[in-house]
Length: 346
Image (cartoon, rainbow, N blue to C red):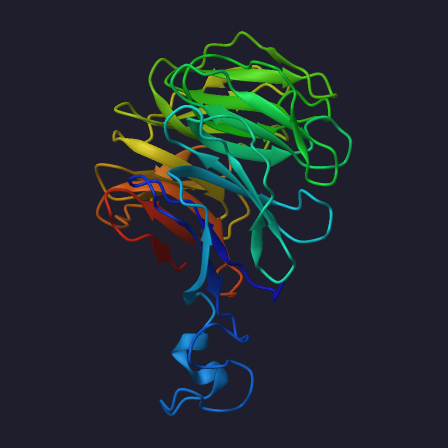
C-alpha cells in the first residue's frame, strides 16, 4: 500500500522452489541499506533518498518472504477477504494430491497461509473474479492431466468452497474471465491442450459449454480484451508450434478466427495493454524458443510485429504494469530453464 506495483512470483522450475515477493522501491522506505525517505545517506555511497539508484521506481528487492515450498505454476492477486489489501491465490503443480494455497495479506505486505486445502494439483493457472455475483472474488482454477477445471466460491471472508462443477476435461493451460456474451456476468475462455473452449455463466456461477471448438492446436495462453474497438471482448491466443491467433467476438460470445497468423513459435503467454499509448490494446508475447515479441494494434484489431527481439528465449509468463511510475506499461517476464526473471521498461 505504498502506491507502486510490487511482484509476487510463483516458482515452478523443479520441486521445492519457494515463491517470492519482490518490493518496488518507488521512493519509499525499503528493505535495503538505503532508507529512501529520511534525507540521510544510509549506505555511504554519496547519494541521498531519490538520488540513489537503489530507491528508483522499478528497482525491486527480495522482501525475504517465502510463500510455500511448492512447485507453483500460477498466482493471482485480489482482495479475497474484503479488508482492502491484495491477497495471493497460488496454483500448485506437482504430484496429484497437493492442494493449492491461499496467502492472506496483513495490509503491510506480510503474508500468512490461510490453512485452507483448496483443490488438488496439478493446477496450472488461477483467475479471480466475482463469478456468482455476490460481490466478492471467487476462483476459477485451470487443471492439467485430464483433471476437470474447478470453481471455488468465496464466502466474502476469504473462505473458499468447491462449487462441485466439473468444467471440461481437456488438460487446460490457462483460463481468462470476461463478459463474453454481453449479459453482465463473467464467462470463461479456456486455453487447452487441444481446441479452446468458451463456457458461459448464467449469472449465479453455473457454467455451460458453448460447444465452440476454437483452434486445433495446443494453446498455452489467452488474453481477453476489445482490440478491434467494437465494444465486445475478443481473444488473443498464444499457441505452441503454430501461429498465434486472434478471435473476434460477435458480441454474443460467438468467436471467429480473424485469419491473422501472429508469429510462428512456441508461445507460452500473452498480455494485452496499450504499449504505444495510442489508445488501443497491443500484445506482448512470451516465447519459449525465441525472443519475446511485441505486436502493435492499428486500432481495428490488425496486429503488426514491432520487430523488437526482447530477451533470448525461455519466456514463460508475462505481466504488464507501470513499474517505474512514468505513466506507461512495462513488462515482467517470468523465465524457464533457470534463467532469471526480467523486467523490461517502456
